[in-house]
Image (cartoon, rainbow, N blue to C red):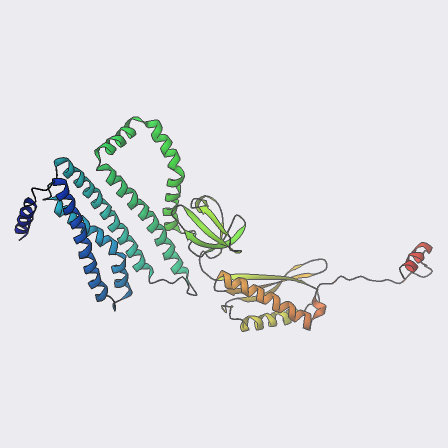
Length: 378
C-alpha cells in the first residue's frame, strides 16, 4: 500500500512538470508542514478529551509532550515529501542535513522530556510542606541537582552531535583540537569554574551536605536553602535577602547545617536574673508555656542555671520545634511570656545591684567638704 501511495504521489508531482521545480518543492514542503500541524491538532484534541477524567499524570504527560509530538510529526512529514519532491542534488543534500539536525534535536528533546517526567513522577510521593520533611528534602534535592546536570549534559551532547553533522564545522573543530593546543588550554582554563561547579553539583547530589529548605549559617548569615541550580545555590536569609554562592563553596568551605539529620531544632533562650529568682517556679512556668503553645513538638523543654556572674545568674531554657521557623517563633514566645510573668509575679527576680551602707565607726565624722557637697545636693 505504501508503494502505491508513493507512486501516486510521484505521478501527481509529475503532472506539474510545467511549473518551476523550486515552486513545486516549496508548495509540497509547506503543504507537508500544514498537514502535519493539522494532524497533530486533531490528534491532541482527541487525546485531551480521552484523558480529561484520568489521573493527573496522564493529563500532564499529554500536555507536556504536545510540542514534542508536533515537532516529530513535522519531521516525518517533511522527510516523506523530500523523497519525491523535484529537488536538485544540492537542495536534497541541504534538506537532508536540516532533517538530520532536526532528528538529533528531537532525540535530545525526547531524552530531556523523559528525564523531567521521571523526576516529576518520582517526586510526587514527597511533600516539602509536611511536618517531618527530611526524606522529602533529601530526594527533592538529589533529583533536582541530577535533573539539572542531566539536562546540561543532554543539551551539550545534542548540540555537539548536531554540529558534527556539518562537515565544515566538524573539520574546523578537529583542526582546532589538533593544532591549537594553546587555544585549547585557554578554553579549558576558562571553562574550569563551570566544570568545577558541575562536578560539585554531582557530588552534592550524592553526598548531600545540604538539601532544599535546610537551615544553614554561611558567611555569618542565617537562612534557608531556597534553590540549588546547576552551578550555584541560593540561600534565603532571615531578612528575605538572597545570598548566591557557587556550588563548590559547600564542598570546599565549612558551614553550619542545622537540619542535616532532622528538621527538628532546639531553640535556646537565655536570661540573666537575680540570685533570688525562683528557679523551680520558672521551670514549672516553662512547662506551662510550651504546653499551651502550638509551636512546641513535645520533645524538649528544659530550664537550667548555666552560669554564675558577679551580680546575676544566667538561666537557659531549651525548647524544641519541628523546623527552624517554628523554633524561632517558639523562642520569642517563651522569652516574652517568661519576662512578663517575672515582672508580674516575681519582680525581685529581675537583675539589680546591691550596695551595703555601713554606719560610721565610733568617733567618726563627716568631713566639712563632704558635708558641703551633701548640702549642695539637697
